[in-house]
Length: 312
Image 1 (cartoon, rainbow, N blue to C red):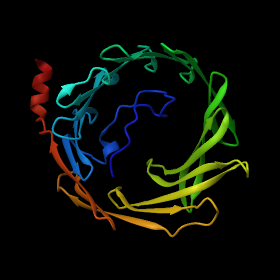
Image 2: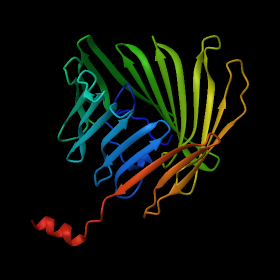
Image 3: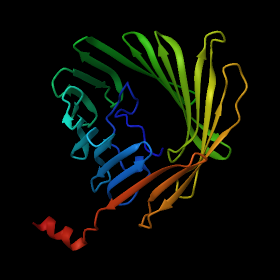
Image 4: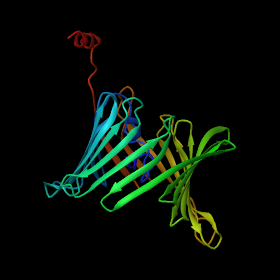
């Protein structure tokens, strides 16, 4: 599927700054106003403002079962996200959540996130504490069950930066970023390791080009006997001249060693002819899965109308 995985935070579950989704997260460009997606898995609707930021999304599971998310901005910064849940046609206040972000007006980074369910049964508050250079140092999450204190440390060695997340004195995650090359292409490599009870559990290594496109992803599991991470699956992507995914190759690595035969998926696109053009149908072979998009664009505002609006 082409859609990005919605996780509000840049590092899911750990958080740094709330992420405002834009057209590029959905493989779209130009003055897109509304995109309605239809596929075997359901229907989704995305609405964007004139700056290309996502302001509303709707995921429909059936005629009376759907979720709506609103994104609200102030001075070009996301300050509120509301997730509203409707089941059997009725609004569910227990599972509908509001996220309110308060920022330091001088520097802009998130200082406080308040999380509330509409019936007030869920209440959380997260304080984000930065150093003088605006680098996140600590996250303190307060819930009715208690306080979680996560501290971040930053280490640089031979051009590689590693960020460690230690929650209540126990290592939870480490993220290592480095530069490399894939053939003649400069790339960025991000290795993320997850820990449980202080012990390594799983890892993923992503290789991205300078445009941020994923070229390769290797997922690892931790082998307690070997006391090391071992690969479980490898994915590679190629892209067409429009920068859309063209092929995806999956190789699984059995626990006993060796590797499976590669599974290759190919992506085909039908474009809408706009300028710039967007795809309105994506076909994935050999499964013959498809995604259809209906895209509505903002009308161009004449330059004179903009000038008149400024005078008035």
